[in-house]
Structure formats: structure tokens, C-alpha cells
Image (tube, rainbow, N blue to C red; front, side):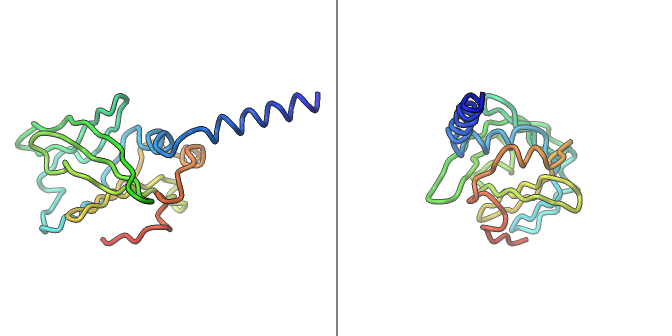
Length: 157
């Protein structure tokens, strides 16, 4: 009986450790994210021009993006993950959407509000999001790579 438990725990450990960083990030990314802060370098005021301020990352690398009130084109896009050195990036591709581009991915645990935060950072934009319906346990289960945690990255807002 004891040996069976040890074998089960060992198999569980091997299964969990076999997950790649990309799989862990995909799992954490999937879902709806409300945009808390949008800090583009061109002093563009986000809330007045975008009427839908959420990202929805779906299966098959499809996403719904924030869209302009006067122009609903560019609401759907594709996303891909990549890794360069010790950093993970998401590339968002959508026609006629200013959000399109390559962003460094950083996650943070907001213990005060019990939320999972996502920072998307590029040379021209910093976007801070909160995950809908997240109770922090999802973040704990996802086991985000250390290179994607906020305490390992400098964020300029």
C-alpha cells in the first residue's frame, strides 16, 4: 500500500514537471481579462476611445480584443507565445487594431484584491489586466515560470 502511494506520487510529479513553460502560460492566459491600465507612449487616452476593454484568450490561439466604439473591426485576432532568453512574449495579430504587437508577459498575485494580474509590456505600451472570476487558486495551480512573475521584472507605468 505504501509503495503504491509512492509510485502514484512519483508519477504525479513526473506528469506535472513534464508541462512546459509555454503550456503553463497558456493555461494561465486563457480566459477573460479586464484592462485596468493602458499606458501607451503616445498619451492616448484608452477609456474614451475603446468601448470594450477586455481581452479574451481562447483555445486554438484565437482572441477577442478591445475594440473602438466607432469601428468594431479588429475585434478578433490570433495570439502566439514565444520565448527569448529568459523572457516570455505574446504576439497579438489583428487587422486594424492598435493593440496588435509583441508584448512581454508578466503575472502578479494581487493578494489584497484576490486577483491574478497580467502585465503586457512592449516598447510602446504597457497594459495591466485583471482576470475575471479568478480566486488566486487558479494562479497557484498554473505554476507560472519564475521569469513571468512580477518580482523578476521591472514595470514602468
